[in-house]
Image (cartoon, rainbow, N blue to C red; front, side, top):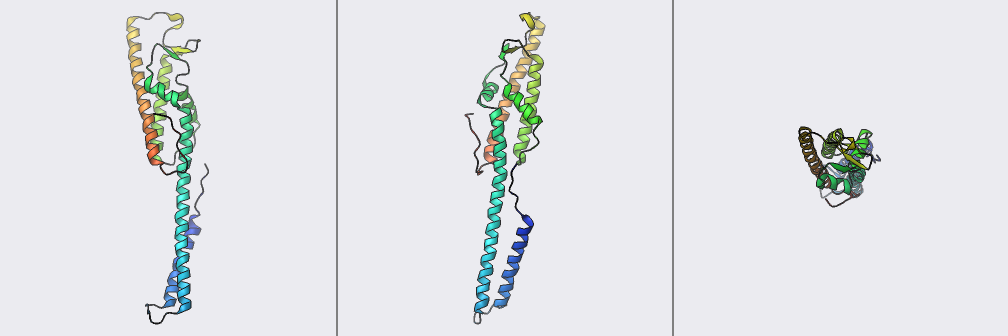
Length: 219
């Protein structure tokens, strides 16, 4: 990540120096102050040191703003990378599509890609609130994905299903158990959709004011 680090110690020394110069010039003008006998040269020096001090403070403030924007922009870049993975289609499937006997083989491709992304992700969000929700979403995505493919397998025709190969029938007892597992999976999918919305809404609040924009699709 490209962060423009603020040179803290040189700036601090410059600030201290400007304040000392301001105090020194004030003493040279006269201390305690006597308005009847100002030294013109000292007054000019006082004004110059005051301007220097104000300029130093403004410079530090601007550098702080740039530093904060760089941090927020890094988080926006990271979030946008994740949005490309959990795209509109993946979100729609999590939120709207019920899990049935046969599912498209790539219905949860976005979750699979996120799991791989997270495993190799060595950079955290700078914002701890966003990072916490991201961790929860990623962990829940892994749990759902493992549960789904613990029950479903590819049928070789672009679909995944819980049915045994050859479309063999299962007993009523096994069928009821499978339907219960599917109901649990549907609840987990809905929970994932809600967690994703939570991550996006929180990020919009926390990263407000960044010079980069969070990519959008209708939630």
